[in-house]
Image (cartoon, rainbow, N blue to C red; front, side, top):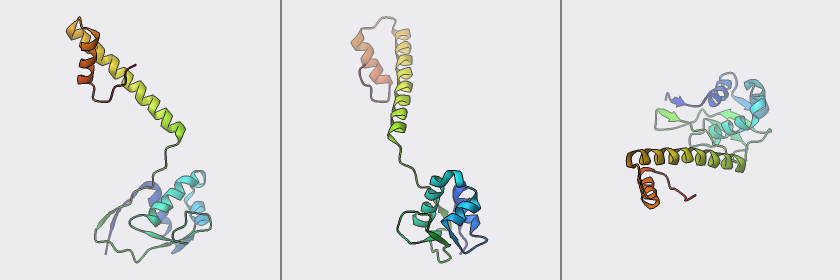
Length: 148
């Protein structure tokens, strides 16, 4: 039957290539799509379309990771009970440097939140002992606080 697909832009570009041809190689898809500069994104896109829950395209050889020698065929035999199919993208693993950068950014944001909370508390209370200030901070802030 007729299916309604919810796909990313790159997935749509790859699927549109199958309007003109039944079978395409990795190199043909790379050349036709104009995605030469984002080979990694193309590989993830092809993996999501051929190895995901709904296999919109079939891959030959079937289970190996995406290589430049792979052939892809549009899957006319796709069967799904749902009319609307959500095709999720394959997510990249976060590198160690990105992870450190993210943690540093979160720490910086939290530092500003702690400073703002201290200012708010001290404006309302005027005078407060350190222990009471810390307990108020724990009450106001929703993230785990590590002592400085």
